[in-house]
Length: 526
Image (cartoon, rainbow, N blue to C red; front, top):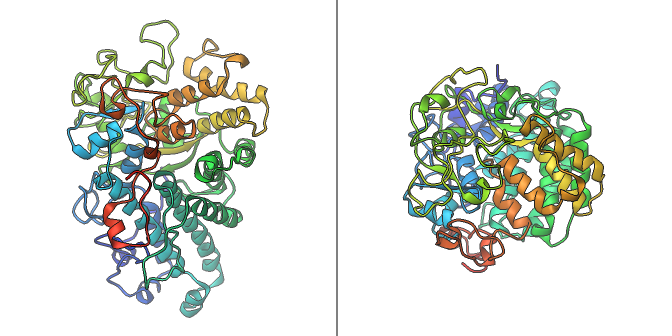
């Protein structure tokens, strides 16, 4: 059984928000006075559940009807669906067939500052920040003294505060990675005027400082209640921030990143799942490989984002819905040839078991972006357990979002070692071959040290982590996301691919936000 924190009715009623305001300093509106709500000890954990829930849920009525953030279809506006699309669709990883202008702009790197998906992601980020700030404002020492909160509950609340700060840092990291310099909004930020824009380097430092401060207040690696963060999540987020520090600040932090990676591996809290496919099934909450996941539940956490989107949208055409435990395919996502060709051809001898490809829908070129049958069907996510049983609901998927897992850490170790961050070449080779032995089922896919180059590791990340929402960040870090050094199908809005301008390494700030907050300056090029 999944041990997931759930939001009670009283706290849900207390927290709520019909819309996300364009001013990120303004907390979500509550219809119930906080001093009434917080007479119940459980209200504090319920408020924390709301902050976690913002990564998975879309509003106050399950999948539909009362969204937290308005301006886009509620299902389209789910946090992970938006983030995944922004990290995946503009890359060599995947393309979507739906003839929607805003999605087409993502497919081709041709977006503008009025793109609804980009704008809603920005507001989702600040909705998360605002909810975390609500919890922090409602749990100050003065507030707890005023309510007569006892010492035992205060100890629990101290951890809740650390978790809220982590979740705020996580969303700020997403904002920094996607948009660059954005406002830093905390529980102490004045609401009398719009917040000032911080530089990307300042946001980076804020995140590092926050994570450093809260680490000791969280459970040891692997010890948290499932779906909640522990020191493993803190180390992973720090490792990601340090790995990409050269992009964010102009100064590499490979040694610092390696220290975090080694701490995760050395903790012994995580191990590779012997079954790669289980990582993308309703069983994945039992996997020893997951470091941090976004829980999904077809009965209690219904939404049209997360793995519901990733499962349905990858199915269509000749694929049988029943094989994936769903009631219908959405005829949307497929893999681009540049990632497909990094794997062995189907039937070409030794098989890479990570390749969840459909042989009857495996064409090389996509000449028509909107034709779902062109490209490679790659239904990596499924609503069927490894034992062949369906999830609890065939519309809403039970598979949790595997945000961070140990395989990613092994590949980060390899990249950092090659970039001069320390570590051992022999150890790094062992890690990458461990992944390939799982993929091939034997040692036939092993590589030798001379083949373990930065270019190989980037390709191995494409093979191991495809469709998991990492690719744009990886390509930006390697200097290959924009420009004409590396072209892929429909990059730059041509079927063969064409170069794009480097300013598109960052997304634009929403045009509406620039009007609302005159302290903001648009990213160069937009």
